[in-house]
Length: 97
Image 1 (cartoon, rainbow, N blue to C red):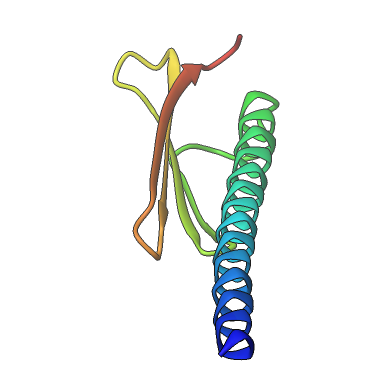
Image 2: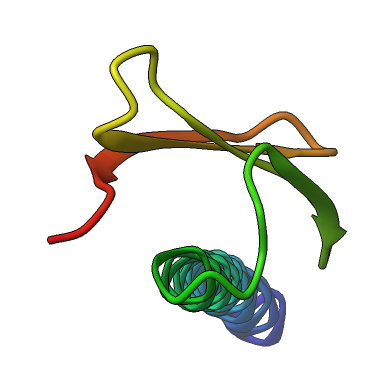
């Protein structure tokens, strides 16, 4: 009887540990993907501000559809990135900070 109880406890503990580890790893992967996107957006903004690419601009990057365009009064860049899995990132920054 004690062996059965010990086996059940070990299985429960390893299941909880496995689920916790999986949740931590998924969070880290999502955070890394977000930072990769933010680095690419910073690079694109730099290229726009130095006239290396023209607006409007669109590209597909690492699972994201990225679009950059000027606002109506042409003083800001509107950035929108849509993840193919459902995430959306949208931002506006001054054209020449």
